[in-house]
Image (tube, rainbow, N blue to C red; front, side, top):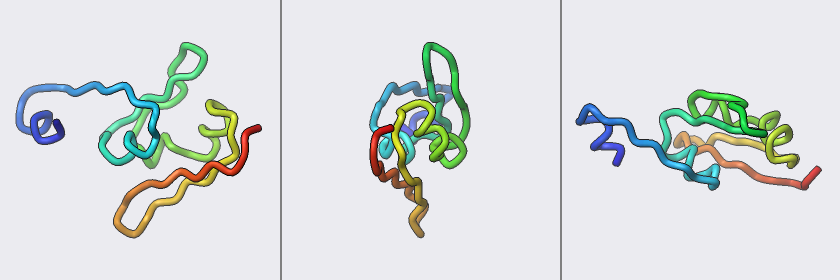
Amino acid sequence: MQRLARTQPAIVIVTVHDLGLAARFADRIVVLHNGAVYSVGAPHETLTETMLRDVYRIEASVHTTSDGIINVAAHRSL
């Protein structure tokens, strides 16, 4: 899908709740909260500890590995 979206005049929209998959495959992420857009941007801009606390009500840490993969580790719910 990524190759198709980059080589054709096309947009690919995917709804996914797995933040790891979203971070790995998306160029841009839209985070929705209470029926409104909370944030929009690249995965490293949108998947933040603040967003996880505000939207998902969890205390979590976000780390980027040496090969650029974003990992989200939930510690506890709030």
